[in-house]
View 1 (tube, rainbow, N blue to C red):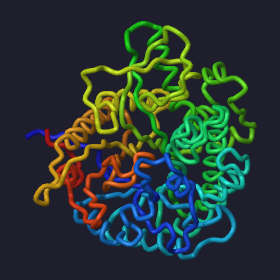
View 2: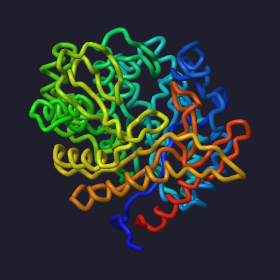
View 3: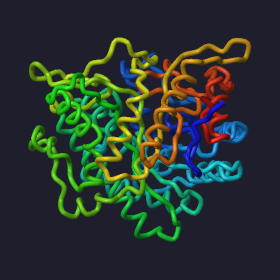
View 4: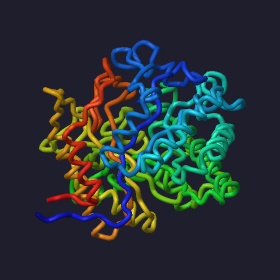
Length: 463
């Protein structure tokens, strides 16, 4: 049997986020987050689901880490809950929250699992939103850097892999442009651009602090952005330009300032004065502010030049602010879909990795999320999920091909370690490699995880 072998020292792991798994929202001194508020607002989350208990990881993390060790996982990407560490967003530190994460980190290290820590995965302290307008406030970078400072100080002796922000596109567009994610604002697309701007400034400020104050910790720090591939509908020059424009509005928006020093010119041209401007100091602070390229990737859409101006605001294919980028997004009817109605297109991942490699001068890349939602029942203690197994095998095979073509891909984190709270979808979507029974909190390892465990331990895919 032949094998596709990955590079030596390739990082293999799974990923989660604090609000999606922890629970314990009123325990251990934790303050409320914007997602706590949204979950209790009628009509925002399916079935009025919430993260009050979630996977009860707050109480069960030792057992969860034992399971990770048993499965041979090498790394674990998780996020810290800002309201658990600094409940009001700034000011007093909650020592109980620090102790919780400190014990979790120690437990991972004792199990031989490398922690990859995300500072912000969407659960903003509620006070910052209700009293200070959250992400659109120009003071956000100062609050975020002060929070990051506490995390670096308390955990940086053991954590050597930091991610500042998870998917600022989602925080901006879904939170402020379309309003389907917390804080559920959809007043004006200008707010989405402002939220993105302050998030990038916050990222830059946290990295600047880490590099200047915590050099002795000898860690690395970066940012994770999400992007789907945009394949031109036809070979026409106009469709190729539409696909490129869509990628620049999606990924270039957040990565061009880091790798090139400013937003893409096409955004300047099409968004105009609603797109904020960086000061020279901002540009200097943000450019070069990521030691690696963190990528969350799930799906692919076809892009084409519209036959008429796009005017409807939507998230077709998780794409961009549609009326500004002026791109029509469609899909091939032959493509399979996940329970999220996302297209399964493995070759799109390889094309996106190559696009990143070329545009940003061959950065080291880590796929910090990739996965699929399928609801498969547990029968006689077994969760047989061949669709998920095939998804991971096909995407990893495509990514291996990108490595063979010269892309510097250094790691892969499957989303998600276990079924959890899927934001506005509540508990109706299951992305986990481990099945969570929400009534009993029993964990059942899915067949896809058993397969992935073999890949991790052998550093290879058996063809």
